[in-house]
Picture 1: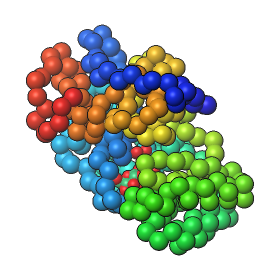
Picture 2 (picture 1 turned 45 degrees about the vertical axis):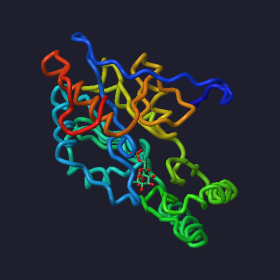
Picture 3 (picture 1 turned 90 degrees about the vertical axis):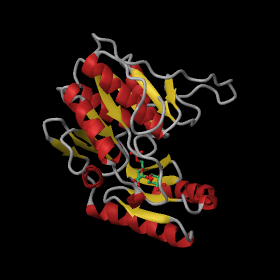
Length: 275
Ligand SMILES: O=P(O)(O)OC[C@H]1O[C@H](O[C@H]2O[C@H](CO)[C@@H](O)[C@H](O)[C@H]2O)[C@H](O)[C@@H](O)[C@@H]1O
């Protein structure tokens, strides 16, 4: 799916907060992880899922009859480790890996020689830029610049120069991260694939995300007349609604849960943040 933005010199109007579900609405929630549910940390392994967040997601999952999915750049294995092998559907590596609600899995196949070449290239780049952290996700490799943001632009240029040698791979830029991943999948395609099957089919997609990679998810959601929600302030965006940060996203999800439970909107979120 190609994602096109409004011209960057167009004035950007502030986006409204997302609505809450009406009593007749049947929502399907698609949730990005880092920067949306979890605040960014210095290193990928530094983040934790608090029991309150897990409980919130588990209750939403139950109230939505299972129509909740994580849609992440992390691998399925990484998501399982982080969330404790949750029962809900998950798209990992930007949709290159997918575990459906019924547990069925599919994964893009990449030859071992291709993966080795890409990993070797990323290792050379990381060594040349001290402080850049290499995250090996097997078929994809991320180079993190959060500790050394000054390396981001040169690394970006160097990766683009090397890409023609890495057949079948593309560059996915993100928040202080540059990732080499196999072509062919993005988060929008993952959302579309999930929407074809139970329990997502026939429901209204509601997508929360913060990063460039989530723009594919917003585009797929908008195509279905769903609700696309940017978390944070990254521009430009195809999202129709916005929440200021991760605690606001959690607070808004808590209000959604309460509407689903009782048809009533509570006044305060007990764990901090405002929706
Ligand atoms: O699609 P997401 O669920 O948002 O995953 C995107 C990437 O998230 C992780 O990296 C980001 O979060 C780290 C922890 O806060 C942070 O240290 C890093 O700078 C961020 O880019 C993850 O490590 C990547 O594999 C994901 O692609």
